[in-house]
Length: 157
Image 1 (cartoon, one colour):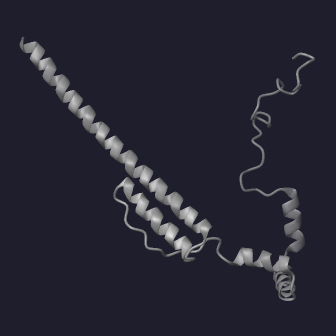
Image 2 (cartoon, rainbow, N blue to C red):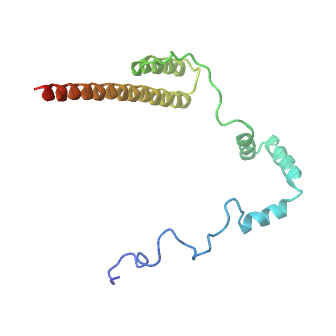
């Protein structure tokens, strides 16, 4: 290590191994000390705390209302729009058109449309990749047949 080294710790120890041999650290799923203390302090108070939170939200505490609703309401909602079936990669054009129409009509939110569009594009990519792979397999098989035929012709000379 030189004096000019901008990171003097760069050569000490083995990266990714913060514990000594035989010490794997805390077991997965175990809780740290702060969490254990907080749980001990709140034990038996859960029901009263939830009631108080609801009371605050009903009294107009917007942050508490948002907090409660974030935990009660589902993050994603199920949406129903008619998207044409996709058997070929080019069918993605019609599927994306249906999604854009649904966003334009207010049937789904733009963020939901974006999520659906991502799925359509992924499906089209998979269809196209499978088609290319199939065509490549056919070409390789024909190449083997041609090579075999050429070898037989050359042997016959």
